[in-house]
Figure 1: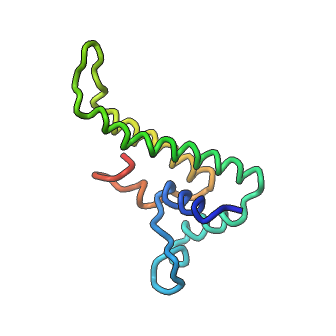
Figure 2: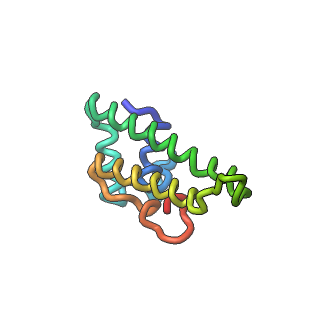
Amino acid sequence: MLTDAERTDARRFCGYPAYGAGVAGNMGWRFYQAYGAMEYRLSNLSDAELAVLRQFLATLRALEATVPAAADNLDTDQAAVWTRNRSEVEDRARLLGAWSRRLCAFLGIPPGDGLMRTGVSWVV
C-alpha cells in the first residue's frame, strides 16, 4: 500500500494537480477520466508493481533535486579549463520530464497538464 506522500509524489511527477483533502468541489479525479484511472491503479498495484513504482519515485526525487542544485553553477561561466554547460538546468529538467513520462507509461495514463505545458514550467 502506498503512503500518502508516495501517492502525492506519483501524482505530481505524472503532471497532475494536487488532490486536496476535501470531498466537495469540482476538481479532482472524479471529473477527469485519466486522473480516475491513475487513482485506481495507485490503489490496486501488485507487490511487484509497487516495487517498480517506488524505484521510479526514488529516481524522480533524485533527478528533481538536481535541477535546483544546478543553480549553484549559474554564476560561473568559465573557470580555468572548466566551462559550465549553459543548458544544464534545461537538460536536467528535460531528463526529469522524460522519466516522469516513463512513469505515466508504466501506470498506463496520459501525462497530466503539468507535463504538457509549454513555456515556464518545472519540466521543460
